[in-house]
Image (cartoon, rainbow, N blue to C red):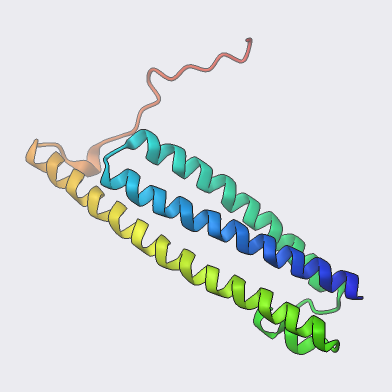
Length: 151
């Protein structure tokens, strides 16, 4: 049983690390937008998608471990209360607290990144309107993008 809890702690720590990487990526997105560096922005967003998929996969593993422990519907914040071993309870509480703190950082950086992206989008739309272009009538095009699967 303690092995499963150790696995849970290790996974929570890994989730915390991935969230830290996501927060860093959000900061890089903010820098890219401020510098008007669309290439860097695109790279950041691709990397962020990879991290998000990693996070989703890890969350599924966490839920599986909790199910194996008979704690399927238990929230992460309530998990330490379900552990009988005092040392393990402290370890899980510490890991969960670190994860919660890192989540708050991600939330904050995500909000800031979204805000700056939305601000720049409004600026682009205003510029388009000044040029006589209706932003709602524009389309994205794949013209010029070719894929050769015969390579």
